[in-house]
Image (cartoon, rainbow, N blue to C red; front, side, top):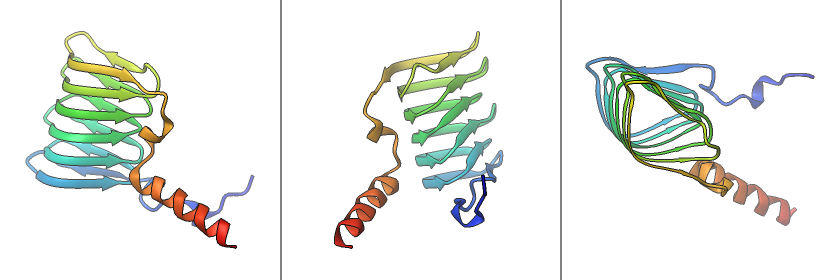
Amino acid sequence: MLSRRGDEIKGTKNMTIIAEGVQIDGKINCPGSLRIDGSAKGEIIVGKDIVIGKEGNVEATVRTVNATIAGAYKGDMISSGEVEITSTGKFIGNLTQKDALLTIARGGLFKGESTLSSDSNVFKPENEKKGIEVNTDKLKKD
């Protein structure tokens, strides 16, 4: 199978790191993976994995594939893959998953509601939903 570099999404091979002591308030859109050791508030969209380190503190709505929570997380999360709460992790909020792939280590905290959704549109990023509609319209016009 041939690989074409032009088809890769820019930034998907990289890990974005929000270092300890850094505070972000707003919207984060990361096409690759994201590690948070500082604090973040707002909305976070991650194309691959999000890791909240032991010192990390996140209060946000998160949409991701996989998540590892070793610090503190408060908010609603939509995950199409695995979610792991480590022994030092604290998850307070609601979790929506495609499959039941939630792991909580001894000492980890989960306080909230965990639900499964069979609606695949829930797990698609907003820009991907719009892109599909635009492409469909283009196909109809041709």
